[in-house]
Image (cartoon, rainbow, N blue to C red; front, side, top):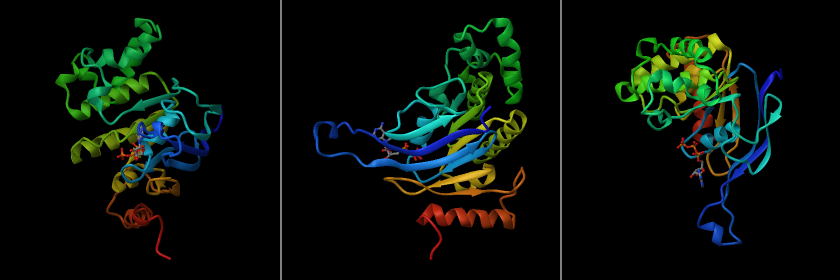
Length: 264
Ligand SMILES: Nc1ncnc2c1ncn2[C@@H]1O[C@H](COP(=O)(O)OP(=O)(O)OP(=O)(O)O)[C@@H](O)[C@H]1O
């Protein structure tokens, strides 16, 4: 297996805006400009940046939902041209991502069912995924009976059930209250430690990035966003955000987050 999970080489993205389609000479600006990054297999990598800088755009390109304008995206050594079962995606809005007419376990097994995996083979995988996210007691409930955090757990379990090597999460805990958010962050760390999957996690919250990331790539402001710096975090889990080490880390991130780098 390729020891680099993801390689981004000179990746740029420009959207064609609807109004500009009719004005032949005007081109909309690049959203992402010349993104270069290598993410080894098994890394917990956080993308951090202000609203609108292009974090979701980059995740969607890696997931295969969006085409890039130029550059190369390799996943496990293969060029990305479309979505694939090697990449599981968890969206911010669980309401629209899970099916309201299916129970928790039916939602989790849905991908496998579509792949014609037999009921007998699906069951132990569903059970394992339910256990990983702590939803064993809620297998037969419908989404309307679940809290926001539980719905996000269903999304995570559904992704894991398809056994991707990469888990892509786009601000998955953004809509949760602070306490549930911390519980979910700890659970995600647990899942990552148990499964060894590569995790790509988008957030605009510096504390969340400092709590989770082994590496944190910080985007510059839009348009033409680049990755200003990738910070390595050499701290074990669970982290204490009130330690001197964490405070220094947050200050360092802040310099890049606010103004693109420390004052000269
Ligand atoms: N389909 C689209 N067509 C045109 N422009 C788009 C499209 N999707 C996103 N954009 C623009 O691309 C830029 C980056 O958007 P993106 O959603 O990737 O940012 P983000 O960093 O994920 O933001 P947020 O944190 O607010 O979700 C924004 O200026 C946005 O308006």
